[in-house]
Image 1 (cartoon, rainbow, N blue to C red):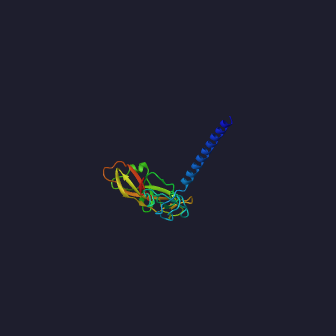
Image 2 (image 1 turned 45 degrees about the vertical axis):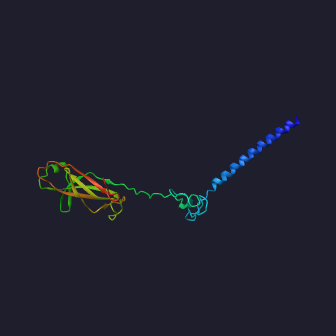
Image 3 (image 1 turned 120 degrees about the vertical axis):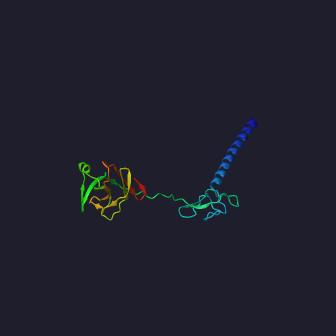
Length: 206
C-alpha cells in the first residue's frame, strides 16, 4: 500500500512539472514576439533596432509596404512619422443670389421695370437685366466669392456680365450687382431670362 501511494505522488509531481515547463515555454515565445528586430539594412536610424523603436520625435521604425527583407533576412524598417495629417479647414461662407430684374437706364439713374413696362417695350429698345450677389464683407475692397455671372436670354447665352462697385452694409454684408445690356430684337414678344454664377475658388458654375 505504501509503494502504491508513492507511485501516485511521483506521477502527480511529474504532471505539475510538465505544466510549469509548458507555461515557461509560452512566456519565452511571447517575449520573442515583442522584440521583433529590423534588418541591419534599415534606414533612418532603424538599423538593428526593434520594430516600433522611437527613431525620431513623433516617428518610429516601421515596415513600409513593398520593401521586403534585408541581407540578414529581417524586415527592412524605415523611420516613419506617426503624426496623422489633417485636412485644412474648409472655408465656408453664405452667398445669396437675387432673382433677375430688368431696368431702364437714363444717365446714372436705374429704374426698375414692371410687367407693364416690359409689355410696352419695342424693337430697338435697350434694357438691362441684373442680379445681386450678397456675400460677407465690411467694405468694398472685400472680394466677392462670385467673380462672374452669365445671363441666358431666350435660350442664347450672353458673354460675362459687367459688375458694379460693391455696396457694403454695417451688418458685414456686401452686395455686388452684375448686369447685362440687351437690345430688343425684331419679332420678340416675351423674354425668358436665367442667370448662372461662377464661384472662383472652385471654378464652378451654379
